[in-house]
Length: 157
Ligand code: ADP
Image 1: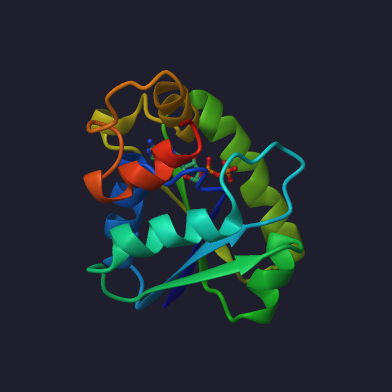
Image 2 (image 1 turned 90 degrees about the vertical axis):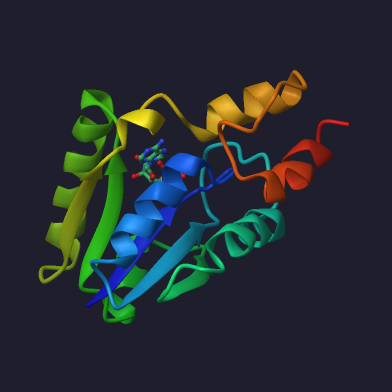
C-alpha cells in the first residue's frame, strides 16, 4: 500500500512525527509531500522544511520525501497513491479534514483518506505553537526533536 501524508510542515513537529511513525506501519511506502503552493504565508523555506523532515524521519522505514506545487489531487492521481493520511486533533480539524476527504474522493475516486487521531500528548501542538515559541526564544524541547532546533531558531536570531 502506498500512502501520502501531505502538509505544509512549517516546521515539522512531534505531532507530525507521531502520525508519520504510525502511518508507516500501515503503508509499505509513505510519501511525505511537502506542499509548496500555499496561499497561506509560509515561514520556512522549502529547503529548510525538507531538511528538517529528513533529519527526523531517517529511521522510519518506507518514508520518501517529495514536494509538489500543483494540486495535491493531481499528485495523488499521477503517483498511484492508495491512501491519504491526515492527522486529527479535535473537532475543528475533523470538519476541515472531512471536507478535504470529500474533495479528494470526488477527484480521485479510488483513493481513501485515513484520519489518525492525534496522540493526546500532541493534541495541543501545531507548527504555529512552535513558531511562536521560537520567536520568543522559548524552550522547544517538548515540541520538536533537538536535532532540528538550530534550524528552527536560525530565522529568529
Ligand atoms: P496543512 O497546511 O495541510 O494543514 P500541516 O503541516 O499543518 O499542513 O498539517 C499536516 C497534517 O498533520 C494535517 O492533517 C494536520 O491536521 C496534521 N497535524 C498537525 N499537527 C498535528 C498534531 N499535533 N497531531 C496530529 N496531527 C497533526
